[in-house]
Length: 293
Ligand SMILES: Nc1ncnc2c1ncn2[C@@H]1O[C@H](COP(=O)(O)OP(=O)(O)O)[C@@H](O)[C@H]1O
Ligand SMILES: [Mg+2]
Figure (spheres, helix red, strand yellow):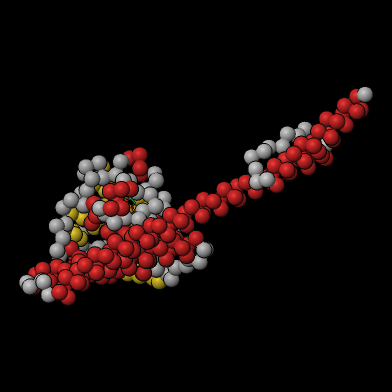
C-alpha cells in the first residue's frame, strides 16, 4: 500500500504533471509552472523541464521587446526625417520663387536650410550607430588626437550656426591641450548631440568649458534652460526617452536617441557622461575622456 502511494507520488504524479505542462506549452501557454517533488530522477527531470520553459518564455519576451523597439524606431525615423525635409523644401521653394528680395532674409533662409541639413545628417549618424550596435557591428577608429585642436576646429566652425540665433555660444578658451585616444568622427557626434540639445533648451547662452581631473579630460556643455526634473535623470540615457514626449517631439524635433548614443559612444572611449541639472536654471552635460599619458 505504502509502495503504491510512493510510486504515485514520485512517479505517476510528476509524469502526469509534465504531460499537462507539455500540452500547455504546445498551445503556446508558457505560464504553466510544473509542480514537482524533488528528490529523485523524475523530480530532477521536471525541474530541468521547468527551467527550459522559463528560458523559452524569456527568449520570447525578449524577442517581443526587440520587435517593439524596432517598430518604434521605424516610426520615429519616419517622423524625424520628414520634419526637417519638409522645412528644407519650404525654404528652397521660397528662394526659387524669388519672393525673397533682401540679402539678409536670403542669408537667413540659407542658414536655416544648412541647419536643417545638419540636423538630418546628425540624425542619420545617430541611427547608424544605434542599428550598428544592435547588430553588434559597431567599431571605433581610434587616433591619438590633440584635444585643443579638435575642440577649436569643432567649436569655431559651430559659431557660424549661432550667427542668426538668439542664443550665444560662449567658448571658455583656451581649451585644454592634451592628447586623447578617440575616434574624431564619433567625438564630433557626441559634441553635436550635446550642443544641439543645449541649443534646443537654452534661454540665452551655452557655455563650453574644459578641465583636467584625475587624468581625464572633461568637456562640459552648460545651458541656462528649463532644467530636467530629478525623477527623469535616471532614464535620460535610455533610447527614445524624452522628458515631455509631445513637446520634445513636436516643438524641438526630438527622437530621444541622442543621449543614448552619447552615452554609448562615450563609454566606448572608456569615458563617462555626467549630468547636473537645476530646474529653471539649466543643465550641464559633461563627458570625461581618459588622457593619453
Ligand atoms: N539640455 C537639456 N535641457 C533640458 N532637457 C534636455 C536637455 N538635453 C536633453 N533633454 C531631455 O532629454 C531628452 C532626451 O534627449 P535626447 O536623447 O538628446 O533626445 P532628443 O534630443 O532627440 O529629444 C529630451 O527629449 C529632453 O526632454
Ligand atoms: Mg538630442
